[in-house]
Length: 333
Image (tube, rainbow, N blue to C red):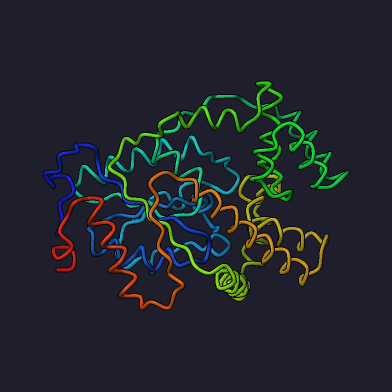
């Protein structure tokens, strides 16, 4: 078994393995195989899996299905908690240090691009603050004039951020507008500054991105939504509302929750909620792919070309062996 704390590497930075890709592409199944082979512990790189009792809509891998692999940053916050990328970065860096100190490989798996990249390259986040009356004013505008009106307002001041956000992503749109109000600068400018110029990493990185034919991915997304609904997504959302989780909370504005909330509140019928959920998930996957294409050092692996799972696993292991300068034969043993 590899001891990652004593591997004799010339580069003394701690190793960090990262697996990203769009929703439903197959990250979870592959991550379990890799974690077992590489003596790794998984850190969730998903902004929604931090929330307790939000299991179905976040496609959370439950304890019984983790095959004994430790998973971190899952079920650590209540659903009404406003979790942020800066908090994720701090917690993730602490978790990486702990895993590495125990001689194991930290392994981030997830699809929230900003969260993952903030750790990989040590982004610096400014404490910009908040303006709750302004937020409420923007929510009222969205209710009165629709989501597109809010998105148009953002596009006028920050077209770069507007291009990345779907008009229905009300929370992030309002935050981008709020940043401009508080600083006089667009959010995109703050993010560019936070990334730095050279995007160096405090870690020895191996970043692998999974991709596949777009139509096949969309078929998988539709199937996943159907499966979530069969597993009880509507009941999960209804239970959260019943316990008093605010509809305006970060968690309930997440993909898979806001569409079902609209159905439960009588604003749309069930068929429309399902249609919107599938459409919004496809749009989300598109934005994920767009983000990952700009990530420095990412190695793409196409998993939709008919290759067997064992062949896919071997290809990924070859990439990891090359990045970390380890013996692939030793891994397979």
